Image (cartoon, rainbow, N blue to C red; front, side, top):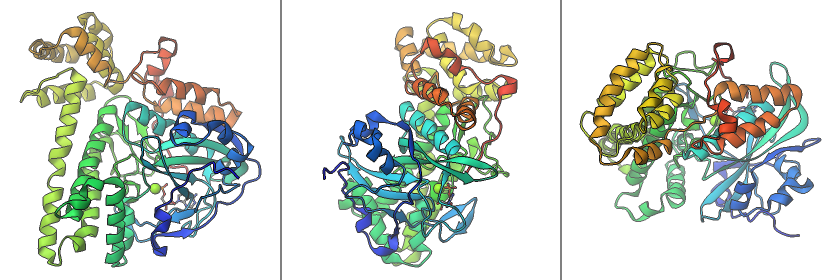
Length: 492
Ligand code: AMP
Ligand code: MG
């Protein structure tokens, strides 16, 4: 039989305690909803075969491909600040790893493929709505240029899952550079299994940070590297208005990819206190809190690594603190550089952060749409006639005028010409993001009416977020008052 999946599994070769071997549970009538053909090809998989009967059975967990070594990964995690010593893949199964066209090792994981030893009271299944949401948002993030897990495929299972009501069941095939989380380290640390922590750290270094293998202090360097990637990642989230929604330590990837899309959403009107998730009652994971939470999660990772730093606890703690102390600077540098690019500034000046902050403040006070403000600013950079459309986004347009005066003075001191500035700004200020009301409308059409045309159309728009796409310009618009979606759900 031809090997259709060129598996090269490394996680399944780790000691038994790292995972549980478990096969997906077969489903009655799988049907393909969507296959990500370019991604399939990039992974060395044949898209036509994957879309065929045998491929779809694999994507639904009805058939296990040759070379797969299906496992559920063990992990722990702080959920909303409370430690749970055992979570693990309760509804996900890692089929195996492949090496992609860039030489990068990628996990291929089914999400919603049936119970595992980590399912606790859950059914191991996923409903179609959350599967479509993850497909849309993760692919949108990739197109925006933000590190993320990818969606390879979505299938419906032909079986209902019982949530508050009966809903169509679905399976998402997810691709990640790994599914190792801060919570994976916590799993071993909570059991005082220092050998396990070390084994995991060695695996993570070899896989994600190979340059560190020969560092003086490889585990310290690992912590620093994860801190740097998380700082850069969260800065990128803020720069496009993304709210993860459930930044628990088990949803924080050590590779620095955005992972575990649940009640995530993008802000429309700019307000740093924005929360969409129905379960985030205290606003712990509000838009503007995300950098602070990332540091909190990284502090939990540092605690796990302490025994690897030094036998001398005080010294180990001092090392951890020194690494954690670099987060704020790394985040600020990435965030401020990103804001400068969004404003069309190529050079850096001391008062640029104030200029950016004052715009954000005016936007917050005037309920200006985050994405549209910056997109229209790109055009106004080339032609002040663009101000007309821009001012309208502010409840008090004069608030924009006052700021625009300062901005124009500032860009006049820049070496680049207006056309170059506009082009550079359009390449960082997207026209299209997965707006909440659009995502909800797509899910309603699919779940209530079995109509996947809106899903396809939204994916098309979001695949080129920095292009104007005039025929689809309506997708750039913020929701009308009656269209606003203020709450999102985990849907597990
Ligand atoms: P999440 O909030 O999706 O990050 O999941 C948190 C934990 O709950 C993880 O251990 C999941 O595997 C588990 N979980 C979520 N939904 C289900 C489900 N339907 N069945 C079993 N486990 C689940
Ligand atoms: Mg999770």
